[in-house]
Length: 127
Image (cartoon, rainbow, N blue to C red; front, side, top):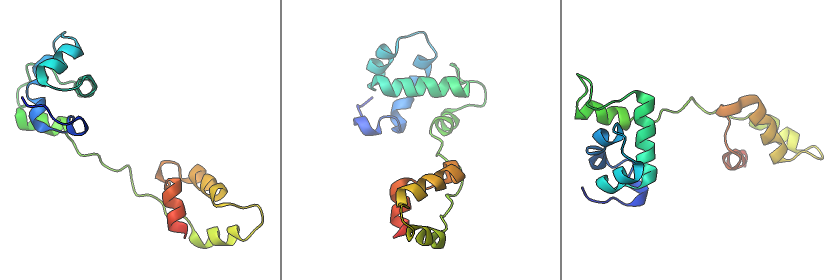
């Protein structure tokens, strides 16, 4: 198997084919990485993913290469839409003394949690 660049090793579909049997064996990650032409970090991600998903070798009945690929390379789904801040309220609050965009963002994050924009996005949208 050919070596992939460091940034794209985990998503390179060709590299996982020889990895599955090695991951479920007691072989050390360093040896697996060397055998498959991957970094130890990538092997660690595969090992973690296979344990989380309960994937064993040999593959269970009904799990072929395509299914294995789908299990390992699922697209990440966003946890939901980000909530737009109340721009009118923001601009009104910014007129008051002592109120900063950073303070408003901190309050916004407390209310919205994971659905809040990050600070840079929040500032960009405010302008």
